[in-house]
Length: 244
Length: 244
Image 1: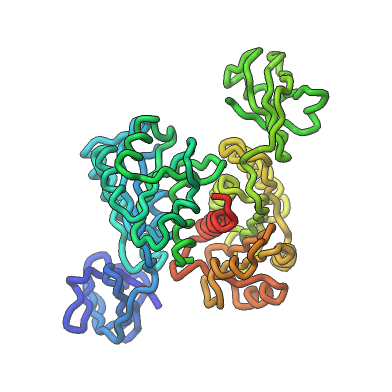
Image 2 (image 1 turned 135 degrees about the vertical axis):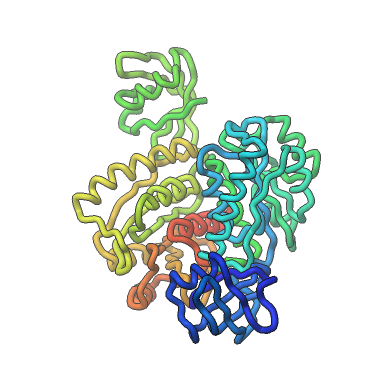
């Protein structure tokens, strides 16, 4: 059954109202009056609907059944990534969303080669949130993970530290591996995964991260690329928390 | 310390002999006589060496210390991927090598859009093995995972079935998830991960896989892209087997 995201504000009185790109998408897929589709409100609810009106740039569908979206994992996992080079940010977003991340946050760090300015970040975020939406649709998520940016390294690590399991993934000497870090915090419901750019983190940044309470954890002796590290971590977290 | 792969046959009598691209690479990195480098024989051994000769397209280095390469995981994980579209094969190879796979094997399946013929496969394999070598160097692996192709779906699944934990990753209805499949086969030393192309597997292919002994396992309710599924699985396997 084809699946669409429709803003929760457009679902009321037992009917889902689609316009703009959503109605366009329905047309592209040649969905006709009377057919059943799944509409997700992006907030964890799925509606099985029967299309009652379609055409003229809008569409309506009556709700037949309401269920909880199956695609949402039981833990909330935020990915904090230092700005990478080229189009690696897009890879991080697309794959993190597929794998079950809740939010993706970019931040500048000392060794970032690319530190976009405010106006360029705004443009990028528009594009990045589109990639998240597409990945959420494709992977049948029940919500669309937000992509946002924070202005400083300090802000990123302070925010990340609030999670039950605040991970700082670092290829240098760490006292603990990812598996043990999870075991030591069993039952966690929220996780942060902080990862570096191509050049990694400076010793001062590692110190700061530990000072605000992040757990410096390694992912084994293999050196992962900056776009691979978050994907490996999210996969590992989903396995450990029973979501795979 | 810079790290190079040198064929085991070029390491003897306490000396490592480098020529061709390896010597070239040494030159590019401006490594000079007297400097220390790490030479890996690609078979799990690392040699800390002191460069004694460099220039004229060749180089020599005397062995100072011999160690086991730290980058090799304790389990052997083979990735069997149905030919994907475009350059996704390269993504699968690069990331699988980083994450610790032992070998990457491509095979044709019913729903593959791209099924390269023999001569085109030969060309691709040359390029793909180069990508594996580069990824192995970058991630500090102790061996260079081979990339190869098998000619048929049946061959792929029969071969894959030989592992202690022969996984067939499928987005359809599976009796078991990835985590439980691993728990049921605790202590596994060899794993196969069979994943499909964009179109997934046909019901007949699923049947065949189960008939030869593969374990049909799901990776949760989220639908992963064909290049994401093997990376998620290898990450999960490395976590579970204590390699993260």
